Image (cartoon, rainbow, N blue to C red):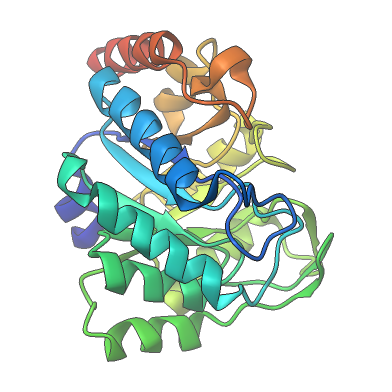
Length: 270
């Protein structure tokens, strides 16, 4: 296990819960009538429900900024920083950020808010719904260090959602190569789109080749599968399963979140 990962999450298998922002200024779904106050209200309620449920960490993300961009509008990143600043004194667990799908904006937001970790697509070459996708891990990592955040943990998603890898190596080979060449603090394995599960065979195959690197399930972990996932993965990132009716675009359901954490604690105890 990498030291940065341990510094942030401890020695256990963390449940990292998503705090999904409403659509931000400049994006097509933005609620101009509700404005910033609606964004702050939604984030505050979801954050409170997740922390009360006992999640190990939270991650703020702009999931509603569809269609997504590779170079995010400055207004989006600035608004996320403003809202996180407004709720900063309410955060009682480690927190991270993810500005889809822009590694540079994600690192900048982490530096501005004091986030402990970032999730992004940092490596690979993909054909995607957003067009050709070629992130630059070296550029993002050097930017992190220029911002004096060498302590910032980088969580690499190596199976991009909404995309197909043009790299014909197997997923385990791509994950192993990313660890060798890019020094991630954790590897994330995803399903095809938000809310869809990564296959257990993919998780097993990646963990087999990376026995000392944290490997987390990044999407689609459900109440019915959390025990089985944690037998393999070193933690999970979860959003949709904790929402009202299990719907990604709804608010967090306090009862669903509490039950998920009860099941996660039982699985970790076993």
